[in-house]
Every structure is written in C-alpha cells, then in structure tokens.
Amino acid sequence: MENQNKVAKITIYFWIMKIFATTLGETFGDHLSMTYDIGYLISLLITIGFFIIVLLIQLKANKFHAGLYWLVIVGSTSAGTEVSDFMDRTLGLGYAFGSLILFSLLMITLYLWHKREIGIRVYPVTEKRVELYYWIAILISNSLGTAFGDYLTDNIGLSYLSGAGVTSAIIVVVILLHHYTKLNDILLFWIAFIFTRPFGATFGDLLTKPLSKGGLDLGTGAATFVTALLLASVVWYSSRKEKVVSIV
Image (tube, rainbow, N blue to C red; front, side):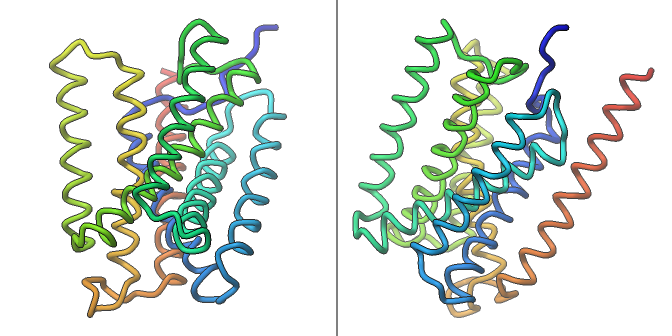
C-alpha cells in the first residue's frame, strides 16, 4: 500500500488557520512565561516538550489528521515564541542577531532538504524523512517570524497595529507574485509562512498588551481561549468541506 499524505493542503483555509495558530502560539507562550511568571527557560522547556510529544504522535500516524496536524503547528508556534524570547531576553542576543541566526538555520535546513530529496515539496508529504525536514523547517520559520515581529515592534518602535500592517503588506505582495509571476512557488510558500508568523504574533500582542502600549488589554488567558475556539472552528469547517468535495 502506498504511503498516504500527512500534511495539510495549501488553500486559503490553510493560511487562515496558520494565522490563528500563530496568534494562539503567541498568546499561550506569553501566558506561560508572563502570567504564571515561570521565566523564559521553563516556558521554553514546556513548549518544546509539548511540541516534541505531538510531533512524535504526528510522525507515527499513517495518514493526515487535521486536528493533530494543527496541534503540531500550534506547538511549533508556542515553542517558536519561547525560542525567540529566550534568545533575546535570557541570552541577550537581541532580536536582530537572533533573526539572523534563525534565518541561517532555516537556509541550512532547506539546503539539506533540497540536496537530500533532490527538491523540496510541501504537499503532498508521504515519507517520514521528508516530513521530519518539513517540521524542522516549520519550527525554525515560526521562531524566525516571532523574532522578526518583535524586532519591528521592540527595536524599530512600530505599534502592534503598524507591525501587523507591514507584515500583511508583505503577504499581499507574495500573493500577487504567486498569481502574476513565475517565481518558484516553494520560495513564495516559505516567505509567506515566515511572515504570517509575525502577522499573527503582532495581532496577538494587539489583543493582549496594555492600552498604554497600543493593545486591547484582553489578557493572555482570554485571548488564548478565543483564538483556540476560532482555530478549532475553521479546522472543523475546512475538514467538513473537504469531505463533501471528495464525496462529490
């Protein structure tokens, strides 16, 4: 029997769920490190541990499960938040230098993936070694996106709304390039994947940060709960729609 696909199809629903998953990862990561005041190292260990557990379950599965897939994505966004904060605030590397390190790691991962598999394909993914490259690249991309988003707001001084505006403009450019140019779709996918991370992260900051800092001051707990419901709703709807289409 042929190996079955293990990852989500790239549709408009994919990107909507990616943004919600990113926001959820940001608010949940902040909820651990700030609300419970357990520090960035302990938060990093918790989120990395969660990511590894759900990833192992995902790798062991023999076919695509939407709920499990997006749980791993949320795990990678939560861990990415803590990786970025740990590098900047605990190790003192700064968001700019941290972004450079993460960008270099991503390029190395994609290079090894391309060299080993004679090309990169993000859908379908049917072999475990390819899927492992896929998830490593996603974890690094989410960490990079977090660091870049924090660089925009903390270092450059953009408001959370302005930071979301900058990253959303980049995403729009990527969409236009996809539809009106012949640029490599895999390149555009990873650019979009990276920049949907700071977009979702700045949206999460907009929901949770104090009014004095340009946020809505909803709190990390409430924002996490609401975003989780939104993500679960879109996952359910998209899965239901795909089943209907497959039957027809």
